Amino acid sequence: MKRLNTLLRSSSHANEPLLKMLKRQVLGLTYLLSHPPQLKRIIIRETRYGQRYQSKQNWLEWQKYDQYIAHLLHSSAEAQSRPLHLARIRTISGLVSRLGSGLKVLDVGCGHGLISDHIRKMGNYVTCVDLPTITSLVHRRLALVAVAADAENLAFASNNFDVVLASELLEHLWNPQIFLDEAHRVLRAEGHAIIEVPEGREGLRWDSHIQYFTLEGLKQICRTRFNVCEVKRLVPLRGVPTIVLLLRKPMIRTSNDALP
Image 1: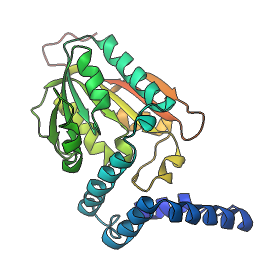
Image 2: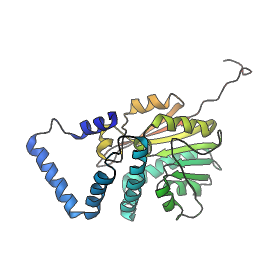
Image 3: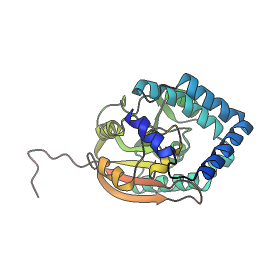
Image 4: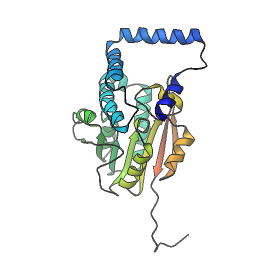
């Protein structure tokens, strides 16, 4: 209920003038009536997934449906060529290239696998992870290994990857801290994680998001497991900015290591 209350407060527009609020609602209704797929999605959301905030399992079932529909609706060449999407690929690819080549990369929440495919072509070995309804999309892209899994329970051995990538993932998760624990576990010592999330409460404008992050809040939860190496912000002409963090898993000291 805490998550639901936060979401409702963020979208209630309590300080918005009545006329402006009514105009916004009319425009929203007009949009839905002229876009039947979106209207169908909302009807299914409220009839089939009305209890989505009540438990993690309910939330996962909603995500399986919603993310599949979202990928179908936004898989056009136009959507994939938007400036923010291209900037995301350039930024993440640039961070990975600085870490080396021939890396074992785990892309959690990979979506269509567009970023994964780009990183693979840079000479790395990429494993994709997403919900079972999404991995079918990844399988359409040759040379990508796709595994259906829960991001909060990664089915991989510890100390196995050089890089863990989570682009537009944490805002969808029931418990992002558990995912960070899992990312830390599967990374080798001094391996890196790359995290990207929408910035601020505006990230909750999408009903597929259950979490929001400020820069300081994101750094705080990441520092429970990682060192923060670099921060980048992607600012679109319209819409919500995103934060990109480059993190490093600290070297684990043993009793035989010399103290500084």
